[in-house]
Image (cartoon, rainbow over all chains, first blue to last red; front, side, top):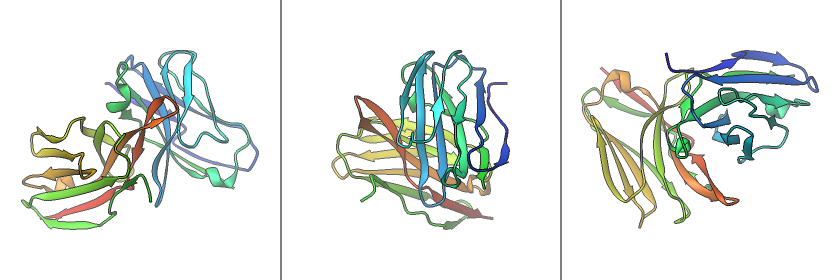
Length: 114
Length: 113
């Protein structure tokens, strides 16, 4: 089954404790991205990657890091989480150079930072 | 002014009605226009995308773009209770030499039997 998987699905952590949210896709997509979704603000892109070793900032990259060492994986790293990073996070992937127009979203990770 | 404006609703309609969902955007440099559907506690799901002004049809869904008015619409014919979801418009806008999808806040649609 074609899918984007995220782990963990739910996470409660404390301020300053480094965490990683993993994302993996099995569709051989070149394009991958991370979003956060907040009430009243909608979906906002954090980072995206056009292919392996190619990443770039989205609208709200502050406080986040990403890496793309393999085509299928695109982890999101929060080095020192803060309460304003409490949100619902989505990973997405899309095919080819126009992948950002055809994004296939994962199920989401709900993060709470205390 | 937000770059993409979308009325959050909720919009409540009876089964079988024609639904019209709308977004406005602020910058004529915006390119591609997408519509996503998001069920509660799920990730968004792409319905369709389009580039040019005019209509694009896929089954019961029709996307319409009016670039002169900076206005996009999604029409749903013969709406069903299973169409109850939040509908997100997304528009590609230029950013640092590339283009980034910018989403509206979403419109909540309720189709009641």
